[in-house]
Length: 268
Image (cartoon, rainbow, N blue to C red; front, top):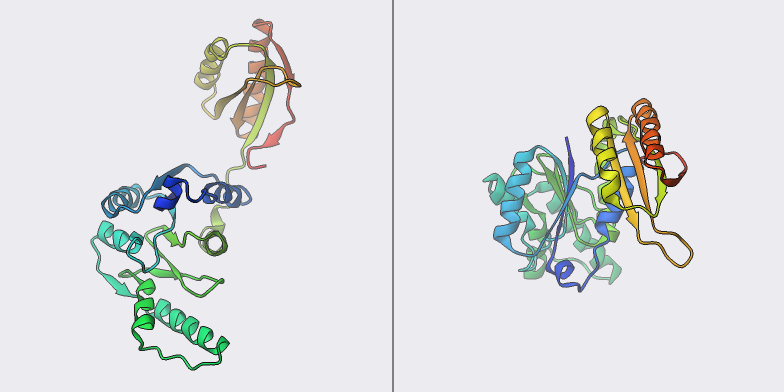
């Protein structure tokens, strides 16, 4: 089961706001021994969001989605999730109560008594309209809930709200997956060599050891650092140890200049 992230919003694609969700989700997952497998960015286009969600619902993946669950004309995610599942969109009872609690709280802060039936307050209830059968995701910041359905978890675009909600989702629904597949890495820095020269060795390693992946991270160098490639293997501890030794043998045959990097867990 893969883990995906969908980031919705014209403001991200136009550059008005810089996305911070991907790096945070990677960190939240890594701390729990999990890994992000894919990410998609989508603008505020209802047809495109619906098509993307249809595909992701069909995948069976665990998917987090940020943005577009408000009640303004440019917020489409709630409606698109319902359309992708061919479900009606309905006012979720728990979400309704939480929105009304928020309205009452705001009125109290102003020394007023809330009228829940004003046009503005009735419109706010739209933020609790989700695909039929959806559950809520609690929002500790302002009580305006997100929602979940079929292993998809929809939260606001605001990091101050989204990140605690995503942590809650992980710890509430997926703690049984934490640290189930600890990954190790061993690598070296190979200096002043073309990546094409290392490619046959990399292909041989992956063909020989099915339990590992080979990676290469080139660096053009700087005034204080020589041009190099970080070449390594990652996977289970035993597979990594064996493949790493074979990799070193291959580098020695190429008479390359290299130094080992510190061993680490892939989740570090």
